[in-house]
Image (cartoon, rainbow, N blue to C red):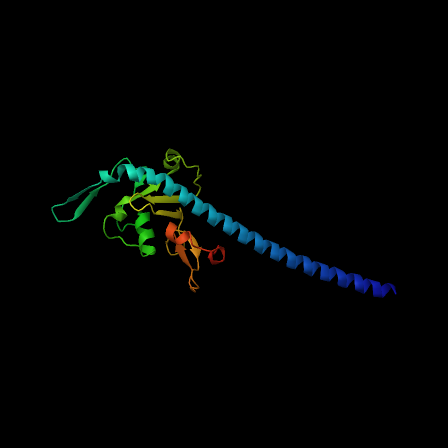
Length: 193
């Protein structure tokens, strides 16, 4: 009788351990999805705050842009210096983040819209009255279109700036998303770590 009880106890112990491992796996999966959802919602809400604060400056200073034509016939855009942030360049250089983000996302670089991109530092966000703490993050605002871009201050193996990595609309390949118009519609299950 004693031998039979030891077998039952050992079986119950093994079953209990298996059930606990399954529960731990499910809880970890749920926790990871909740973290992804919270991070995504935080980035989207930060972008919305930036859009709202930037709209005030756009309305006040957008008319101060001066367009002239150089000797070679190329248009020169002189953007107001009253916009908050550091004006980004749109040149094909390894240090030009906005050029990289626009080209990776297949966004148009025609017309004058690319010249209105400004990178926002921690001081710029404070000046705009936005309580966002930048860690490894970068935010950009386009004062003409009120588009906002986000990326991390690091690159992947292919030298792309890290944004929101997702597999969107059933596509097989993962891709970085940087711009508010694309990120706001992402679903949590599309986002990758």
